[in-house]
Image (cartoon, rainbow, N blue to C red; front, side, top):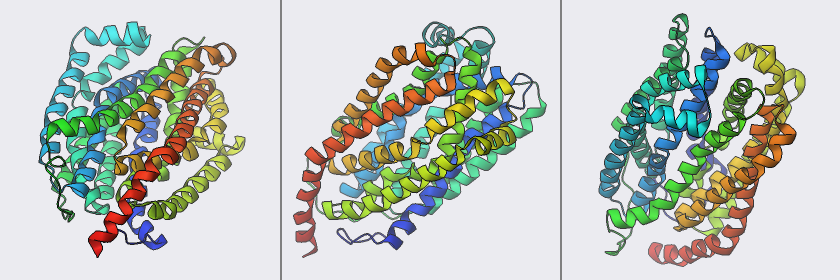
Length: 444
């Protein structure tokens, strides 16, 4: 059941809406530790982890524009009630991006990108190319998944999303660990990831959801692809830059004294840290679906902040040396050459939940308010700061590539958080406040 606009969000209501999304985040981010654990059990774990990490970073950049479909579909249903333009847009873009990924996987373009741009060579290059032969279908599957997840979020049906993500994680684990007995490396992770995503896309596409009741809209609001592109363009830029960030950081780490160990250790730390930060990963859906005025923002922000602080505290405890080494050794059986640099990077990664949660919440707020341009500008700022900081930190932190990579990510997230906070106070809050009288008038 979808609440009436303007209905106060209670702690119980927030929990009912958000807990399935927390489960979704945990199940989704569990894929990276599971794949890292499986790859760590291959015959050449450092090369397999590095090759898969580079390939996954690139495919993430390719399919990133489709991730905005989830928010655009939800916003479209909540404001207009019509999903047709979004569906057409998704089909075209998904097929196009899968075609691009296919070119990377099966033509010399892949060698050029990985060797000349990213900077990996020899065994890591071979592993990355083999992984791409199984990852090229990911953009098409992501488009289907994002479209139907947005439909379910708009209908306040978050439980089917969690169920589908659970199925994805289960399929991925079975395939990944089933292939550890074969002489494959990064390709193992790619096949498992694609199989799990296919299962998830199928399940969310079959799940029903009510269409939100919306007020009468103008002709401008019901325009198709042109208006859709202007609205979603900055969101596409945002997700492309988000997925470009690991590729940029991997490119920096490829220039450290020990690139294979640096990239492999960074890949493991990222997998563990983002899994532990999972509860804040869906906060954009909370602000998008639950915040329709400034008063609602105050309520939901308190719940979101409490969640982010709690998760940050938990990650801080797990960053204690004895605890983190137990996690890294037990879960991944890391070689000592990887265990030490990964462990030293872990305390810095403890800042991820607070900064990432802030980013997710305010991005959803800007989407609800229609300020998608600010989302894109914040992402540009984050990447510019990382690029500026990389040469400064490479000289002083290059000996520990994993800590260098995590530090660059934190510096970028902090700059984006400051920008989003300032812009929210200057722009988004006034637009949300303007919605309040309209909501009151409609209910009267």
